[in-house]
Image 1 (tube, rainbow, N blue to C red):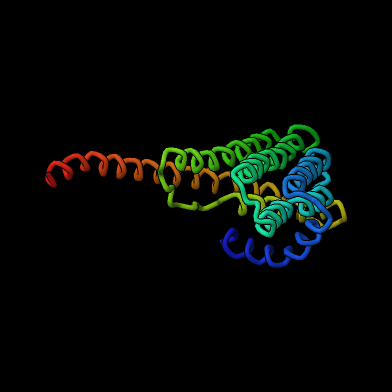
Image 2 (image 1 turned 90 degrees about the vertical axis):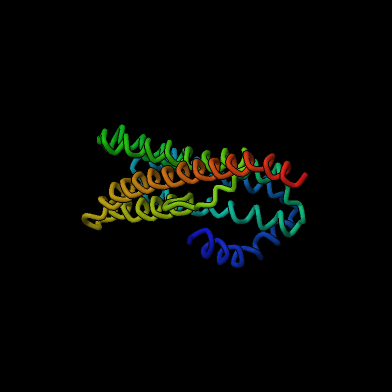
Length: 223
């Protein structure tokens, strides 16, 4: 849902900014690299210190580069396999930094081994969820399922909860518990999504192999 509607909305909003960068001679790859560097810095500098509000502000500013670079590439007519590969690869780096920042906080000042483990699970499961789709498509399967919690949902739930939890430092009582709840939601949702994709790949693989086994019979009948 978020990929379908939110991405379309923000793409329209950010189109003028993308056009401005093009006029300034900025390349889409540069935006991708700067955006990822900003997200990584925001996550690994602020989150391990428990500065969730300001960390989320910094990350949010840079995370929109994921939409800007693609918009620029389309305006330039330069959409390429390399650009798609770079964007997808750096997305994984950014996601890992965000959940790694949470894990570092709970391993240190947050002093919660369970939530540290949950954060690590969110990091790992998010990478594997993305891998299952990419691997399934690489062997010729459509992987026709989105799943309960995709990247957009993982980011929105985690970043909104982290930003709001950071308001505890400004005197808002009880709100710090939003982040642990969000991490559990993302962890469970990622596990469900992983299962959905694995089941889908297994079904599509069986269907493809069944269709292939019937082709020679059909050919002989035609002769």
